[in-house]
Image (tube, rainbow, N blue to C red; front, top):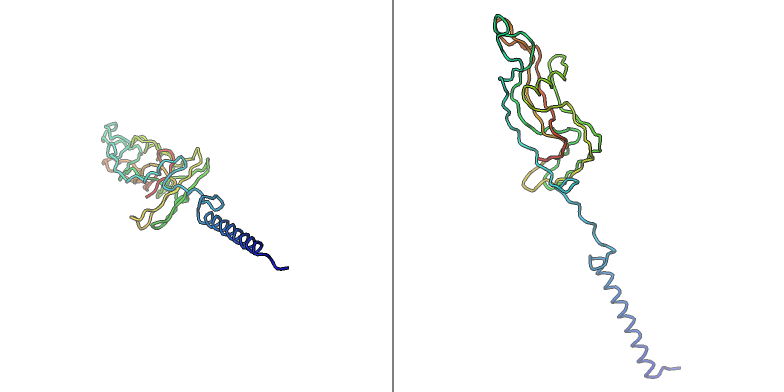
Length: 221
């Protein structure tokens, strides 16, 4: 049975309304998918870089600084206790002493410009400084003498008492950089020896050392 003019007109209006609703729904879906007001495709909050876990900026590793050594590095003062004026007791001398950043090679990462570097260590992680020597040495004697002579606090190793983590993005102004766990400390050359009857310093052992001093922290350069 053919439709009347009124029926045809009603059918056309229903079809137009259906198309309009479909277009509106598609427009809303596109808006959400491209970062509109919807949350279905919302981006995660970007990870903050150049900051430690407490939100503070990660410090740049301090430059090496020269350290004045008392008594010219001789931890055994040359007092006239003997007839020849030179005590023969063995001792240590220290040279080229510098305040420096002492990093852990196992917790150091490198990258080129634009790369974000990340380092993390768990509570209780222990890392060590370095000591080299030509002959057998009791390291505790060297460290004790260095502390007394240089007037600083030193240790062979450090242990983190908290979990540490941090990220740092190598800036465009640098071709490369590094991020590392470490602490402020000291590096130096050392000699162990004694003076003979002619007041000549006789070396029995020698080497280098790079030892941490302050609490562990993460730094970059």
